[in-house]
Image (cartoon, rainbow, N blue to C red; front, side):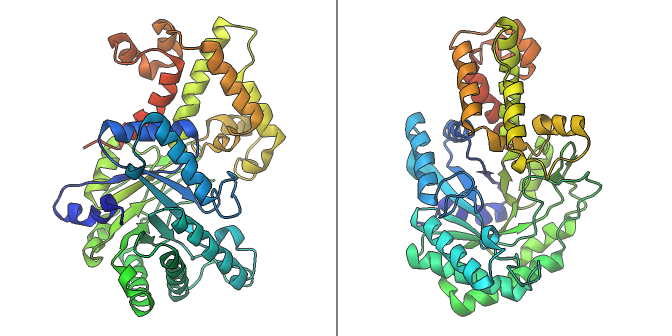
Length: 416
């Protein structure tokens, strides 16, 4: 069965309802739990996505296959009482990117096996991204080649799970995980580029996989949003006016916007109105979680001065395995130290599953327990929650602050 909330997006947009789905791109268990609780509170489906590098048939950097990630998400859903059938699982950038150093034939075979694994595991939103060149090819491939390879991947998914998935095409996106340089300006996708991408994919699908074309529901474009290490490019509707106008030429499709993290609520609301009906967010969710953890650690440090410092432990963990931040964070030693903990790109998120980091968080939560924390200390170290604690709307317990930190981000996506 097709994921109905996705297949209805364009019809809702055409009726002026301004609906949008939040795509949560994270493997952190607290983030996923918060996303499910957020969706449950609104009687909505929850869309959880994994990327090709994060989850694939070889394990990805999480060590999880698509089937394993599905069971991981479902396990959290079962624990919090969220119906499995209300979970929409998505696969992002499904293509040869993890294997682009290999010859094209070999890389595409692995990409085909990956999308088969996603489809077989019940993922019903599949982003087809074969835009990157493989060994011996140009870095950016011609549109016709990209479309041909996208159809090849879709055909493999259809072989495994006929008629079950909806597809997203398009690859003009912000840098995954955030830009590495200061943001001077971000240029929206041109209408000409959108129409060209649409036309070449339509022709390829209609020639080789016509039934599946009716289930292509979105196209990834750059609306002019991005975040770097310490700045955010906020959506400018005027700059995207021509792009937004091109949606009329894309029957049945909506825009998918990546890297919408840290956008103000008013900008998110305008993105919805402008047809960006799939809004992806990831690093901001774990950034907010890290803020709450560091606030709780400060409370614990004050109450128990001999306790280990979570910040010091995370610094040690990141320095011991610099591969996930070293090529992204530049500057002198002090600048890099600040970025390791406080960059908007939040590359610290790769380190929370490290055993030493996991133990540090467990020790912190055990130390704080389920006791109510003094609201005066909440005011000092977790001020965003203070008014709700004072009003009795949020119980001042450590676990509540972790969940609420993520839900506050998701709540901003509901701004009308």
